Length: 199
Image (cartoon, rainbow, N blue to C red; front, side, top):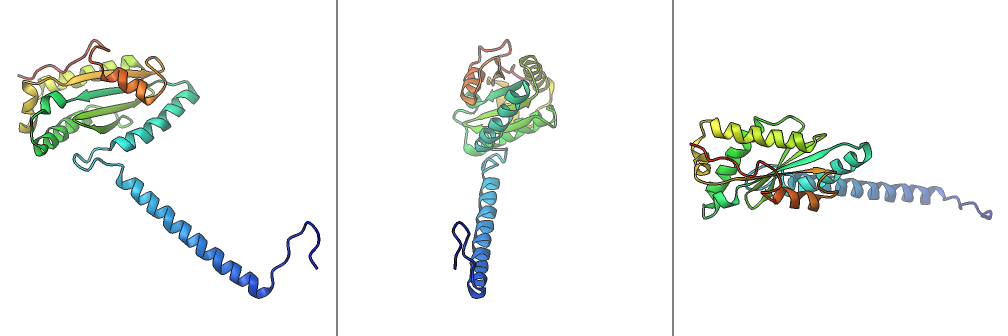
């Protein structure tokens, strides 16, 4: 007889059936978890340039912003917009230019700096524990490096074009991704607004 407030004990057969069904549910959950992890991994990279993707940037930015808020740290962005340079170019050429520019940037930044693609010819650097002054110094270093570096063929397009560089920093310029990207997208938001032409 079942006592009030206590669960009814399962018979031997029922207990075994329950264990089998529970095992099936756990297995299905694990397969689903692995599938979700695989799909998330697939979306981490931009299909064309193989940089970390916009969806990865959005997820990582949210994580880093929460950390910056919790520990009262700075978080900055450097946005490089090549859309005017790449206008009218073939998709293949656009990819080559972005890949070349990304490699040049990769040789300049810290291991903790995160380079991602935002699509439409835009690259963004996520700089943890970096105030706006630090983002500005990095933007200047990038500009100077490109100006004095012998460029590979795919970057010669930058010679006659302009790559807009913008910076933004949390908490000075806003408290969410949209605010910071809007500030960084404005070429007038810092003293370094464009990358110099390359001779």
